[in-house]
Length: 491
Image 1 (cartoon, one colour):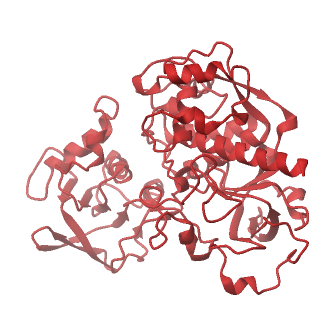
Image 2 (image 1 turned 90 degrees about the vertical axis):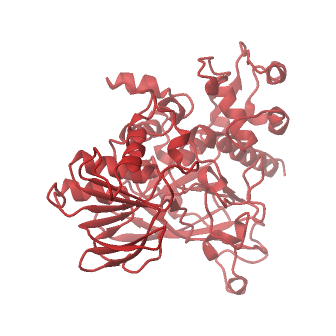
Image 3 (image 1 turned 180 degrees about the horizontal axis):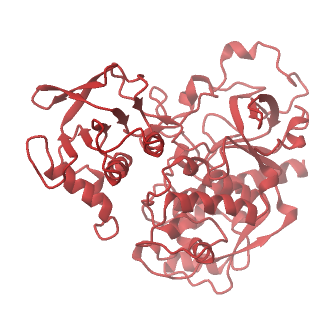
């Protein structure tokens, strides 16, 4: 692990950093790129296929996008994201991307040191975040080009490594390495503090829904009349090579939450879910195969779930000829199944799993030996003797012998460093935070939390679940932070 920069250890409440970013995945990397002085400008030759946006762009040719009325530029845009800024940035970078066109980007980039915002990016692992914990041989759902960040074309980076995209898609290993290389390519390392685990984030002054009222009465470092109106205390520990943990405490005027949604796997809450042979990530299946804990003669592995992660697990296990029991609650013909939303030519492996789910049921001897599909089944119990109890839609219960169980039913953000896991900041404060159903409540054009000034959310936490769309959020946060710095300097 890289040592923590000394600047992050010696901060004081009177001199906080302008920004601290929690999370070093693509959201955090992209925002760091903006805050390091990289600024997008509208090209002189800009010719956008959208005639309304084209006219607007002609008025700001040669000007930085960060200094424009972003809300005005977003008006009238439609696309696959509910975020106006996500649509704006995406259509500027790939004007006809959804139509499969190849129109060039409307933006050019300049590095201007005078527009840097001092910041740190805290992350537990290497730059790229959760992409490094995924099974590396799996292909991304999005097109490879849609995974790239500003100023470094993913396809060109792949060519330099002597690799090519398959069906225009890349492996998760390629994506993780691309993000790690991106940080080095643009000299962002000085801002990244690896091996950092955040345990607490709280404002030091003023009333906030994110601060426990009882804590407001406690003496706070840097509190009192001289403290700035917006300042956050970030506490945590820094893992060092010796395996020890070194605590840290730093202060920031603004905090950006960019932790993604893969830190906390969803659980069923059934009896036996915490047994040592029960797991919740596909990475655990990969390790079991690498350590040869599973083989063709093993009892079946139980895979629970009907999403793409569960499908990846089926493919991984069957590639090693490990027998599989695949249980899921929906009917195979359910229109809500994710497989129906994927073009078959681009995603043949997922359609293969969908065919297996439909044709290889418990009561048939279909063509996929070693795999058993259990549609409309619920897992009721797991036992220490490696048995599981499943119930079908008719109420019939069956006991199966298994070697391991993998419950792959999605994941949720881990905001344990915020009071009540950040629920008071969500759209629905009564429900847990979910990137798809209940993201944080943020302003449309700044991504600042509605109920917490100075606290921002990016990526899945704000409902932007695809890399191509999270970059618009980074644009909005960067523009907001730059305006705050300008107003502070003028004051």
